[in-house]
Image (tube, rainbow, N blue to C red; front, side, top):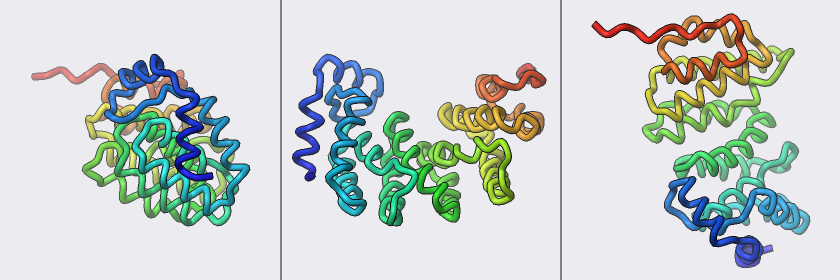
Length: 236
């Protein structure tokens, strides 16, 4: 499987009307073919059957370099797998994509691929922690989206609790970041955590919630019956 064949496969499934709709929706200046996610999944599944891991990493690298919407989504999907050995090059490639993020859909697909690699080797959180200080908003957001697996344990092991607390510390550092997508990412993290650990999520909101925008407080507290979003402060 090479890049030319992969792009022909994707292009054959394109739809000009859908492509125009996608361009208007995603608002990022790149090529859109108008290919649905299920059709991209079908392509990626067939490509995977023909390639070993190093070949998949190389194709993902070339797909990403095209800057096309469907190509970048396909690149991420090629590397979205819990068991991927060896995975060092895959993780390095995913991390190298983060500064290119400029729209939520591609960023989220890449972060889903990255989640698998972080769970496989949580020491990679050391790399991710640097992202929260980036001037690039999408990089800061990625630090929270890529760590969502640590919101999901009902009975976390000590190392999982440690990772969870580490990311909550990042949320605390970013809680006054007024970028809408950052506020949304913090609320997403807390909302998902509240499905598995209500006291910890509620404790964070009790302490730091007033520093979030009201919409983010409301979203974070969606599953918390005992949390009331405080009224905005009165300007004097």
